[in-house]
Length: 326
Ligand code: AMP
Ligand code: MG
Image (cartoon, rainbow, N blue to C red; front, side, top):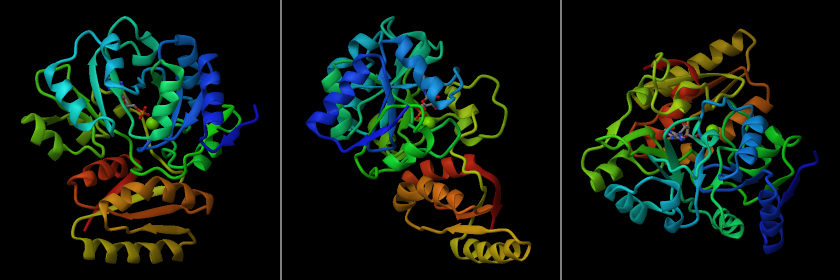
């Protein structure tokens, strides 16, 4: 299958809409990472996403809408706190997990009774969803386990023989996936940290928990609420070593480790961006660049687990084979 990469325009968006209406797949930009979309109400179309990505069928997808008005038919009930959050953070990088209506095919939610929904803050994504008139199920547009795609070229690298169209909206603004917040239990619970931060959510909701699987990534959690957390994710081919603790000490350790590795004949790359926001924006891109260069080890300096730093550190910990505390 030949893959076209088109700049967004009225013409290319209508071409994309045609593919989606016919039950096909289209990759499109969002503010977080690129998504691979299909008609969320068409089980056969959604099954193509799992096939193209090599995604395990027990990992549910996020349903993307272009307006709050689209939500009621997708869920059993919209709790008050969900209304407040939609009004405050949508469009934006916040995914809400609510109890699902029968409208949503089982394949989308991997058999769960809940469905994850968000409205992306990206003109192209919103125009595309409006053009088709149905919600789009869309995970990140990469092969399962590789770093999430933050530009159209990344999508092409992973999926070029598997999908027919990529809408190229340039580099994304945020760079890590959305915050996933479960509202089906008694206390709102973060299942995946993202750019809408724990601190922001607590300000609005009061009590907000962080699911233990977010912290204990490598522990075997028998029954995870967010099945995505048990899968390997975000990994470059190179081994990632994460250096945490006081920054100056961590940087000194990184330099020492790099020269030790190079003496043994290994290629090593360093990521030492200190701004959590800037690190979020470029970490997946750096992973891919180092892989292209054939680097064996990527040495990363951690950032404080606060604000968006919590999201970046979550991805880094999941990608890392080892955490070294300075
Ligand atoms: P991705 O689409 O690749 O960004 O991954 C979507 C994430 O949302 C996965 O980690 C899923 O586990 C999570 N997710 C999607 N639907 C649900 C749901 N119904 N309940 C809990 N988590 C969900
Ligand atoms: Mg993903």
